[in-house]
Length: 141
Length: 117
Image 1 (tube, rainbow over the protein chains, first blue to last red):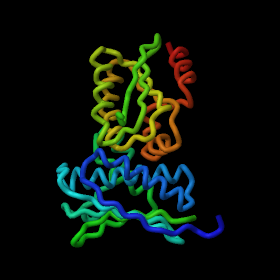
Image 2 (image 1 turned 30 degrees about the vertical axis):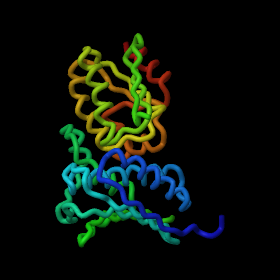
Image 3 (image 1 turned 60 degrees about the vertical axis):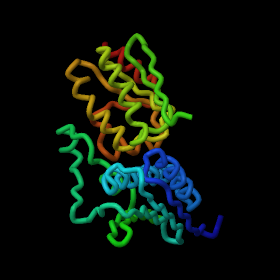
Image 4 (image 1 turned 120 degrees about the horizontal axis):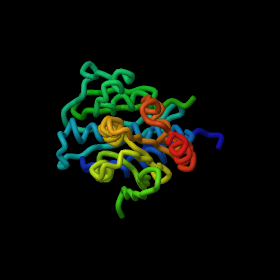
């Protein structure tokens, strides 16, 4: 394949954990279509799992009566993933990423999701608006 | 179809767990139940063979973090083997490979357990 694949995918689904795996599979497949290797596709899948789980648990406080819109844009430069919701916004200034060494020493449980997203994606933006958005980008090398 | 099935085999050296499927917020309770049952039976020597594990997210890692203290207090261990690239990446990235010993395959893990008897 010489031409870089480009395309857009959009899915709206209920804010319930049983739908998460379906979306992570979609994300992993999209990463493969975009030309990323299996290792990167796996990282993208985990980041997506964590981002959606955060929306269900925190933005919607566990309520399954809302919807989440999931968008993927495959561009010549990158894979851009958006998780959109109308629940409580996560603001960048509120984010405290754990220091892993300390975290492991103190055997803390929970709070790892945001750390994983940051480690596995190249860029993460939390956008606030009518719809709030966790936007995650993986650049083509 | 169930998204996660966990088979447990009682081997001479330890209990071996075989999770099949993915571990995330949706399935983590099933995973936790199995590991808690093993601990309730006072078995603190545990190997998780990850051959059938598609991926594990932070909820699953939280379960492992939650039980490691009890296991160590009881002179036990929690080893893992047969990880795919995605599962290994998450352990490695988070530094969990310092907290849990990871083996290439089950045979290697069992051999190490035997050696340290």
